[in-house]
Image 1 (cartoon, helix red, strand yellow):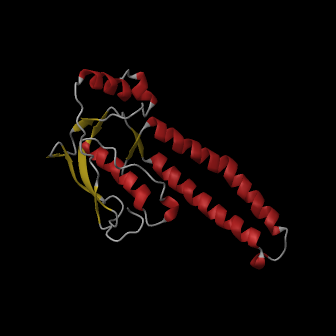
Image 2 (cartoon, rainbow, N blue to C red):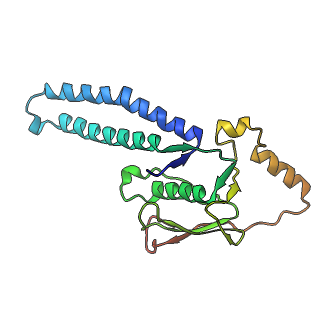
Length: 199
């Protein structure tokens, strides 16, 4: 069973969604089904069919959340292995390019300063990210890399005393006489030619 790396905050978010779906949505949908059954013939009962479809979606998401939580590996986001960085990017890519719109939750693959990689939108889940390099050198799966964000992305990072990125940047900018624009590290997208959803 493959582990799924996630922050403590991400784990908590999934746990809260699971609790809500089990304790709030499930009983609400069961009540909708019960109420719809009182309206007569189920074969022509739109409320009943809509409630059953909602139940199917909710139970599917519950199973997905239970699986993710069972395989979760809570990580310290201040240093991540090359393998974990790839897994996280694969997860974001799946949130963008999953063929099932129900699982397309969005994400941000652009703000990865210094990191370059290719993303094949049409590839299978877990196989979309390739050619990962940092400062021109390939990322090593077992090497740990420092990772920063615009805000602490987990309680563990904040408690560890890491300096917020905006303070680090303010100090850096004050120390520079001239700031030259840097080229953005935009991921190379493969297999999206002619896609009207991409500008």
